[in-house]
Image (tube, rainbow, N blue to C red; front, side):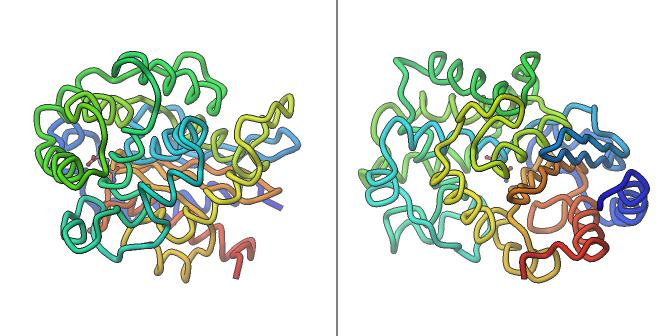
Length: 306
Ligand code: GLN
């Protein structure tokens, strides 16, 4: 059984690795974050909440937002259309912001790489970026059980000012007929969804919903259809840590989704949701200390799926 002592030991173990990583250097606002922050929060289905370290420090959700947008796009466009016409479900082995495969294979490989996530963002309904973002924010608050979640304006401005690589991906996708609608509006929504402030506590709750087959753990309201919660957990396992997903499966062994803000969301089906925050990233863009916390917990509690 997980105890606060085990969580504290895991935090202590992970701390040693924060100095080896770097905050995201390509987004000016993220570069400035204190790289020694580290926190882990675990929630189980019986209402137990355990926390160690910096679990209430806000950080931008970044690519963990791709879970939320994927659920909305499945609802809006249907899973068949989305996964047959727009994005695949296979890992790439390339960095998250890579453009290299777009020329040989028009559809992005999966919804978690940036090309895939920008495509998914274009499938969300709403008359403009404001309406789309309003729906995204409302759903994120629900998944995290926190009505105070808001956009981080300086990070949004910073991403918008420097997001030329994402612009290149989006215009390429438009030229290939994959991305429909207005490119700049789609990007504006994408930059905003990545720039929402959350905490490790929030992310643990979101993970718990996925671990609970898509149902709100408090009142069992269905927030995600169970079959899609299952599909998303599978995608998290194969693609959630980008080109580090294989190694993560070997050393840790459960579904996870990272973001360059330093967060990692981990749903352990029928057991618990874990949220980690550590902004010092490894060379793949995943939280260096966060991965070590999860590795410690996986070994200590023998909870690898494998
Ligand atoms: N906003 C980031 C980007 O588009 C998200 C990437 C990530 O978290 N891996 O580059």
